[in-house]
Amino acid sequence: MKEENEQSVSCFKIKIKGIKSLDSKLFYKDSYIKSFTADLLKQEKDDQGRWYVVLDKTAFYPTGGGQPYDTGTLNDVKVLDVEEIDGEIRHYVERNLSDSANLIAGEIDWGRRFDHMQQHAGQHILTAAFVELFGMETISFHLGKEFLTIDLNCEELTEEQAWEAEKLANQIILENRPIETKWVTEDEISSYRLRKQLAVSENIRLVIIPDFDYNGCGGTHPKSTAEVGSIKILDWERQKKKIRIQFVCGGRVLTQLHQKQRVTKSLTELLNAPEQELAAAAKRLIDHGKNIEKSLEELQGALLEYEAKELLGKARQSDGWKMISEVFQNRSIQELQKLGRSITAHSAEVLVILVNEINEKLQFVCAKGSNPPISMKKLSGELLPLINGKGGGNDIFVQGGGEALITGEELLQHALEKVKQELK
Image 1: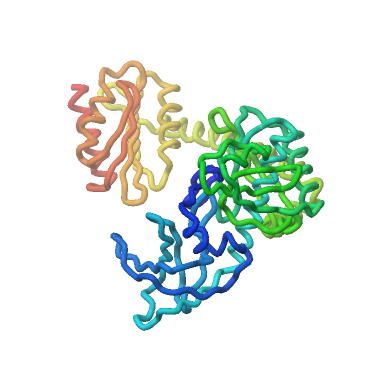
Image 2 (image 1 turned 120 degrees about the vertical axis):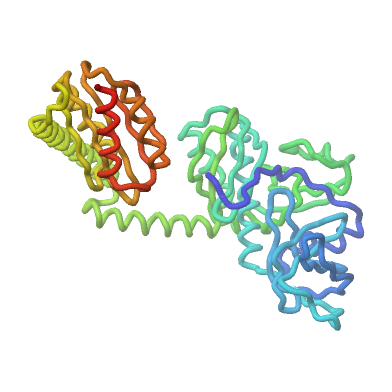
């Protein structure tokens, strides 16, 4: 459940300063404003060298309360980010505006704004549904690019509970209830059945769905629940001692449905099965693949066993010991390990040195039966510096690998010389 810039933020933590500040925030007067004109107050660069513009009023919503910022244009210059800093709303722009521009024409990216309105209102509805049905409170929420998350203050959530909350939320949407916003004083708060304790004591803004949800919030919302469209829970997981739910609302439901339908259609064609039988068909395919893998492993084991016996039959006698030494090309280190173990399992008198050249690297496996009085670990310590390599093992069996600073044959010959020295 990860998204770019994801951050769990409580939608209830909103702080708005002063009536003058409220008058300049057109998104509170009417969240449906798509264009506006305003006077330019200042245009500067911040500490990071980003141009920003401050206006006497704005319809651009700044990041806050769990809701992302609006985008759009100011005098046809793209607005990339909007933040409220030290009581002023800064519009970060792609480039500075014309020096002669005093009257600014603002255009909101309505698609982005309305999507945020749908998602934020949907979050209120779903959160209230969990409280109404099961007393599960939301302790934080995040509105991301593709989906939303809420964190429920509980440790378990059943599929039946999630389904019941989703059904209630969609019923509230279908009833086309009004979504009202109201500014109230601290003294007036007691008249409302608030879902969560407020974090502020002045300039309090309530978002109200009559007879269902009363909540302090500074985000933008549509005028009615019907405009949310629909809500769909996608998934949930336990996060420490809370449950994180992933869901979508409005137009994002159609996007998710389109994506999933496209994937489902592709799978029905690939697996040659109807949608209802996709899970069973996929399981049969996976089981079949596992059986094939198992059969291949058994065949590879048999081949390695045959190869081990063949090499053992060609073993050279050296000072009373059986010596097997080979240079391979592009074998896996796992194959060399199995081969070495298989050979030594058939003879207590054998010494095995296997070298592999692969992708401009050298690998080796050195092994011995129980009788030869030599340490493979010591031998590995002699070989690894020659290839700037690393390895591991014990006195009976070692493996290592490194750079192809010499040829595989040269590494093998060096190993054989060290073995002869040790066995004298």
